Image (cartoon, rainbow, N blue to C red):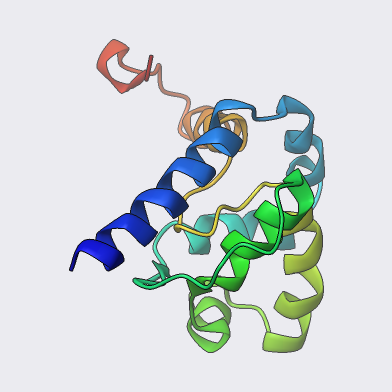
Amino acid sequence: MGQSAMGNDLVTERLRRFKENENPEVVLLVADDPEFTKIVVAWTSLDVRLAEKPSPCPGESEHEIWDWLWANAGYSLADLAERSGLTVPLIERKLKPLVGNRVLYPDGTVNSFVQRYLRERVLKLFDTKPRKSAKSA
């Protein structure tokens, strides 16, 4: 178990660094694309698992680490298609920019700026005011 826990700790630590350095500009990718929005919303309810025994990371560049994290993520394209109402080929095409621009994370979460943007859109849709407790620090 020690080796597996260590591998997961490394994955979690590497992923945390990306989450701490998010770009707010990626919201613009999702803002005007309903298909991107559907994928992002479906992603958060998808069963996404990081490998218990991750492969060795091939390098230390940001690009290599990001690709390595995704190589160690497991998820079902068919399930994502079903949840989003889109076809698998379309999702395969749309996933590349969402992953490449770090909108989606390989642990089943999404960029926090995108998440807040979508939450605000939903609140406007229902014309409600956000509760103070709903805001994350």
